[in-house]
Length: 305
Image (cartoon, rainbow, N blue to C red; front, side, top):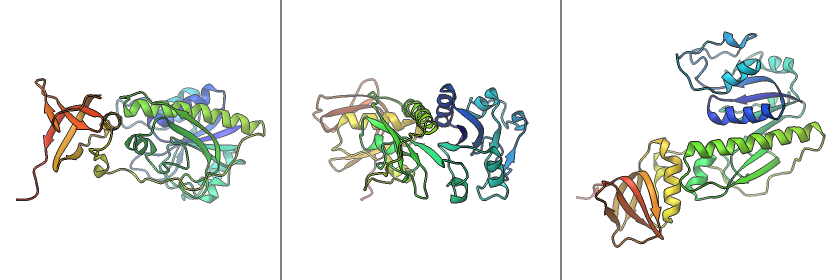
């Protein structure tokens, strides 16, 4: 099976690609999107020698690009997917299937039709729930645990294609967003390798998604609000899993607004008051079934009077 792999410069793409290669899957080329390659050059480019793609910074974190170089995999830069000649370039690669892990462009139908078996996507949720660009964020916000990953066939809709495989995975209390993302990528990469192997053997699953489900857009600052009736454990895990976004967490308790950040822990012992400031400079904030300790807690001035 010849695989064309599509992704970006983040760890999710890197980990999925690494798991695929470790499973012995043949990746015939890597198509990367994002600003880490040529932000000033929008046209599609191919390097016959991958080292011809210059890096624009003296130091960069290792990503899928470096992994491809190490493996001798040709690297393409993705400009507009409507660019003339892109379909011909993909056709010349003759991929059996294309695999996608965190790619920020809509794949047009004419490109989806080029690989013999179409496109497979790794999505970090149990579809049809949590479709959209940041499913892990919304699972953390909703208090979902275990979370999950789905490998699905791509169609014209946003994460609506037939399911090829799914896997659940539990998250430990207090896990960081980066660590949770890496766990989802590893599970998704292993599952993708299994699906590609099943495809080669002629027994890949393809079942329509159940009806219903949900779609969430990219989160904004207002989506970091927490509610006083959430459990303390849920609030702590949401704050820990999304802290790297850098937004404060507003909450209203008994008519008073507060801004929280720096989650330190949670406990099941109820507080006698909404907020308890500690000698260490941290504070405990009351939620359902306990409290959350935070490094920063400040009241929000009232907009009245």
